[in-house]
Picture 1: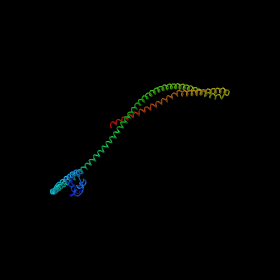
Picture 2: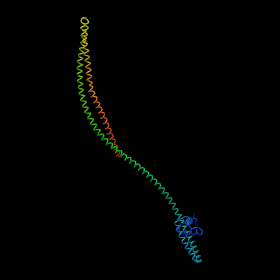
Picture 3: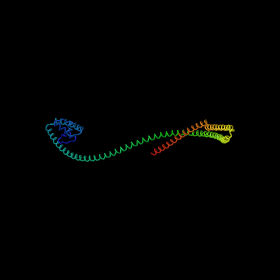
Length: 329
């Protein structure tokens, strides 16, 4: 709190600093920067120090003058200085009143300015919040854009890998297509050979069946003749039973007929066995079975390769659709 007679803060100018230093000396205190600043109620240390140096220099000159001046002149000068001090104090008081009024006006202006500043700061805070929200949205959009760019880069990388894989699959498909064509031609060759051999076997089988049918027909004719002979023989036996004397001869003839019949049946069985053997044709059947197995294997490989080609064509279509969608995005 200021310790000057006015009880208020004074400016740290030359007059106030000199007055404070003189008052402190008269009160028996050291006119230091801190004491002068306390007496004034504030002020800049550098200004107070500069004016104190001037005061100290002025005081030494005044003391020198006082030693060389006569007493009556010194008293007159003191009276003059006192009057000047009174006039100065009056002027200072008037100036201080004007200054205080100006300070009050400035304080009012300061209050108005502070109110306006508070309103401006509030508006600035709102604008700052809007700017911050915009910056946050911009940052979010930038992050989303970076994420989208990252996804696009990853998609392009995957697309390049897929294109590379598709190229490899296309090369494999070309190789598979060549293999399929080779296998197809080989299959046609085997099928033609098999059909030729099957035709030959069919002709041989038809020839054997015709011979067997011929032999069977002959045997059936012989059997019918034998059966007719048996019927005739039965009639003859019945008639010969009446003739006891002719029975042994008729019996012998019947035995001969029965033996011939058994022989004919044996020949029929042999012909049936021969026909079965020829129709089986083990060597031809085995060769035919091997060729049929090879043909089935080739057909299975052809079906597998065809399915692989179909899957690769389907994958190619899906990749083309993915490429189109990425290009549109």
